Length: 137
Image 1: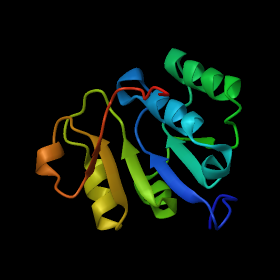
Image 2 (image 1 turned 120 degrees about the vertical axis):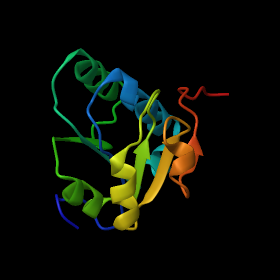
Image 3 (image 1 turned 90 degrees about the vertical axis):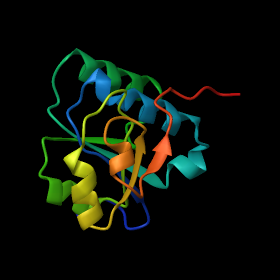
Image 4 (image 1 turned 135 degrees about the vertical axis):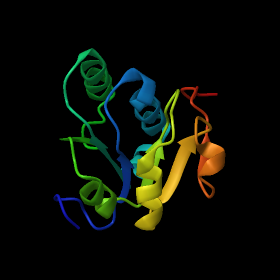
């Protein structure tokens, strides 16, 4: 597998700009909730420009939770490159229009998990998730 990713890892792609509305923090918190032996089976690839206050906030939270081996920030990446490495595309957006990355994932036979935001009902075969950050019970 490309990019130095171990063959046995499940690759999650978050292909969007890195902004609060795109809700990267949900993935950080969700990965943190997993037991270590499960979390080590995943890698989350994040595309998008690695700049700005929200990016810094996400990176700081990742570091504070010791998740540096789980998340990789790739900078802006071509759709084919990131989706070509992905087992699943996750879009936990708080708000969304009609994300073309979902259509591209379908063409590349990549599973799509996303929030019920704009375009969800038009893009059949997506697995719905909540946009709320999970809480430990």
